Picture 1 (tube, one colour):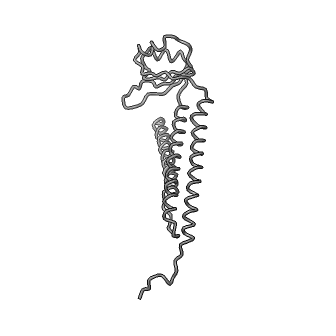
Picture 2 (cartoon, rainbow, N blue to C red):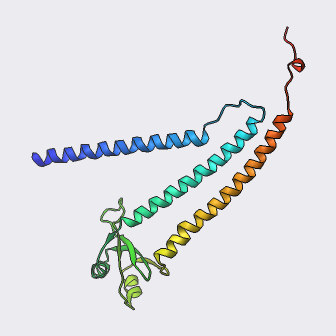
Length: 204
């Protein structure tokens, strides 16, 4: 009876935590959507064109932000893999309990076979030892595997984060300069356009 009560308490706590996380994500996404896509009131003569340009680049910024969040999510998911000894990896491999693997010079990552078809297997990572017949073992035990060239964390950081961010910053700076130039042109047109009360049609 006590174990059942404890399970119910844990379940209620998990439901409360998931509800809080859902509410926070919903509020954050709503705030981002309102900031990037909510139309602004047209109060000036040149405002409609300027508003369309601003909305367009806000949408582009929103898409880039979503891509960065997805990349961060994938990175965090990779960090959550269980590290197992290489001997355990060989043991599970010979027992045909490994579904797929990625082999590099620095590590071997993959997924164990799931006991239930509806669920995904548990991910793992291990540091390999030199073994010339590893590819043969993987093939004999029906493991779907790929071999990739190893890369250091500096190379990964440079090509996966620093260089793409610098390219995005350069593109964004160029876009801002072009947009600012177009806005100055619109402002000059707006300064030359005057509305005289005498020229307006009279309503009788």
